[in-house]
Amino acid sequence: MAAVTADQTTQGTAGTAEEAEAAHLATFDAAVAADDRIEPRDWMPEAYRASLVRQMAQHAHSEIIGMQPEANWISRAPSLRRKAILMAKVQDEAGHGLYLYSAAETLGTSREELLDKLHAGRQRYSSIFNYPTLTWADVGAIGWLVDGAAITNQVPLCRCSYGPYARAMVRICKEESFHQRQGYELLLALSHGTPAQHEMAQDAVNRWWWPSLMMFGPPDDASAHSAQSMAWKIKRHSNDELRRRFVDICVPQAQVLGLSLPDPDIRWNEKLGQHDYGAIDWTEFQEVLKGNGPCNEQRLTQRRKAHEEGAWVRDAAAAYADKHSARPGTAGAAAQPVEATA
Ligand SMILES: [Fe+2]
Ligand SMILES: [Fe+2]
Image 1 (cartoon, rainbow, N blue to C red):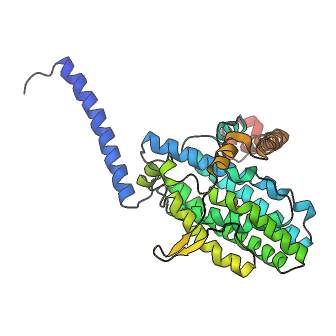
Image 2 (cartoon, rainbow, N blue to C red):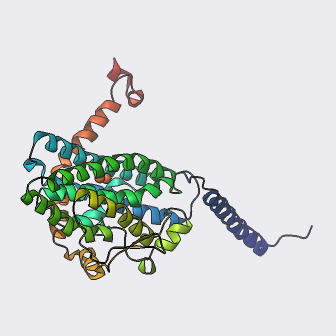
């Protein structure tokens, strides 16, 4: 065997690191191709991790910011039954936020870090929550259209390649499905109520329809992250595919509701076997994303205030956890002097 020079040793080490990286990538690619789940301890490309953190954080932020427009109506719900339903729904959204922040933490990021970024305006939430809830019918329109669009977007995420995200989505989708039905039932009652109630329901649908279509994100040819997300099987369908699927679901439901969708260009496309719909005002979408929607400032101010006012709860929970871990007979007590436990 020829003598190995220092240079050759260095190259050999570099080659080994590269080979290890290539082997990891091959294992990762094979797992994605086979529809296996990637789990927190598995090797994953840094860009995959960063993309998931970005998407899951945005999703978690949307769940908790989304509590605000509907919470606005809890104290003014027209009956005890409606109030109980709405409170349960808003609580569910807080729970969705918790599942998703926890799932994001498995990628090595902390909840504090994500919340700091939200509060500093460095991470986004869904632009739909920057619109105001002007009447009680808006609670129905949000349930039917906003939760409905969320389900259409999120059901495919139950098969997402990252295990903790996929599993969180299974439970979230079950609850979103309940939210969609409660909104639909609320609108059905209003639509078949007095003429004023019917008008209120129609007005709410008119205002929420287009922002709901925007929830699917920009058109495919303008979507920055779509192609890579689909290759990694984080995303399973394109924005435009999901948007059209949502329109197909809503058209017959609107007919049963006795309400019209505010788009004269919706018509059945025989060739596609799907509905066509009118042009979306993407300028409005961009403006709301930039922070110029009707409620952007209000939503973030309220969120920061809630976070500051909740500091004592987090402190109390941390103090309780410390006390609990130091209690005799627990794992934390093992480190205490013997006298302390006597
Ligand atoms: Fe939710
Ligand atoms: Fe929901």
